[in-house]
Image (tube, rainbow, N blue to C red; front, side, top):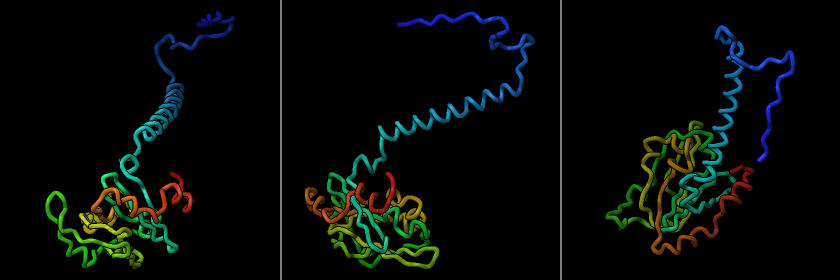
Amino acid sequence: LKFVHAMPLSQGENETSPPADGKVNANDAAGSEQQIEPAAKRARLQTEGRFSKLFPPVVDRYFFRHYDPRDDRQDQFVNRHSNGLLVVGLASTHPVVTEKAVKVETSKIVKENQISGKRKKGGTWFNGKSILCTVTTQSGSSYQVRCGVNAQLIEFNEQIVTNPGLLDRDPEAEGFVAIFQVKDPTQAPVQCRKLMPRKDFLQLRSLEE
């Protein structure tokens, strides 16, 4: 280890020390605070950045994320869990996100869906083109949300009916549309073969992670 010895001050130089009367200049104090604040902010942002890399969102940790891009930009996502569950919803690029949802009306087949027990028996089986609901936006436009997979409906997110704003505020998490399951969890990847991985989807839509 190398030790650096402080050099004595030459004549005419003054050490930075509090004034003899103990009073601190207001301008000096303000300047010090201004220097400390940006430094603290930078440290906080750096810490948050490291934290987000070490502990990514729950969706990224437990799901394989897939997308169904469409020419009309009515993109949807399918998040696949290792246990075979499939979460379906609107991608952040869907027009509903910018137009703001004001009403969500479930389709007849969803309303008639009946499930029971811990194993979610009795749920209706859907195909990829089945309509889950219709979303109306502030502009007056209506969009139909498709199932996107061939699977059994075990839950429709009723929160988006009572609070349609979830679809544009948090479409790929709390604002999901429905949850499906397949008979055999090993078949869940098969349902996503025709879908696009998240990395490719972001590149297609010129988005950043």
